[in-house]
Length: 451
Image 1 (tube, helix red, strand yellow):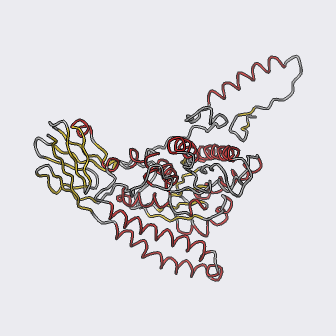
Image 2 (cartoon, rainbow, N blue to C red):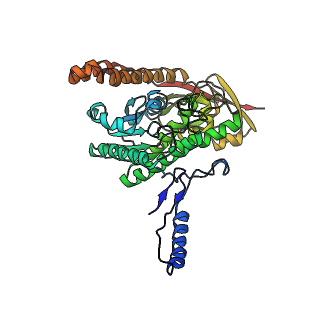
Image 3 (cartoon, rainbow, N blue to C red):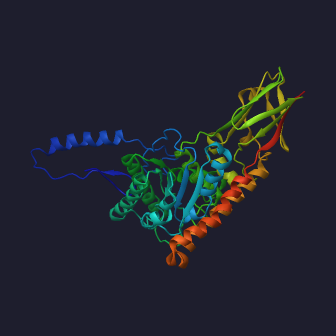
């Protein structure tokens, strides 16, 4: 039987055999061991020495868009989900950047929760609303802030499998998310942080096995957080805490990493449209949720119902900055592609003004296409995006109160049916406010040759 240790290293126990056959058995066994090790694929390590004990199994690649039109998405997890940060990034992104899907979202974060805790409440809290797709993120509390042990690992596996099977039985698609990582010192644990992260890596590998076994999607939260956290501390200093200042609850940068993992698992393409200008003929076209109003004297005016993801200004070395998270990950190139392409550019350089910001690009860059949200820190969508994002935040805040305080409070215990009806009545205008906030934006891009 093949077993894995807490570090993710594969161990192979051998039975005793008679001396006469032992040499042959050992030779054959070592060939088999080597075959298993070579057959298994692992994630690349940013530094082999620093990550010597870690063996993260290669995460399965997404297989196309998992989301469908009018999906009801449930975002589920522990206190990290209850922070309403990665869940807010996901809901705002889907609403602003992929409006054609008309996905609605509920978040179910619950501080201190384990997979077993959600398993016990999922019928009452989540399945009653008939989600068509769900994401989960457990393992942080399940690993009990200590080194791995087999009994605890099997307890985690049992509960994770039960959750997956329950969602599948209810007809919902599933993204099984791994736990994240811990930082240098967890205040409430005496365990070594490396031992805890090796434990979390083991649970992550277990989640991959479950996802493959149950034929559901997998979101790799752990390995990108650990690897990018290592990269950030070397780039910005030891105080950069990808896992958060308390070593468990990430700031905005860490939550961008988490949202990136889930959007990747959901199979989101990230092509938000292209504006194509012909500087010779004076013609312009736009794809996606954008329409050309006019293009005269080098100024393109458009009306857009599809937004890019807009992050406020922030320092790249600040672990509580959305901008820092965007810079660490491939979020911009993977999920936030709104391109400007200018053909027949005869000048060497051009000034491009989008909203209130102006930048200079070469003619070659414009011909190849520039990604506007990645290049411009201020955009014409900022104000509208902020209003929409704040509406999402208000709704998600109420969802925590609805589930934790009311469903599981005196009101729910007295009359669950009435509590559901009353809280849904209160939630409905918050949902409507999100739809109302998503308005079309009229904006312009101006191109001027630099002589």
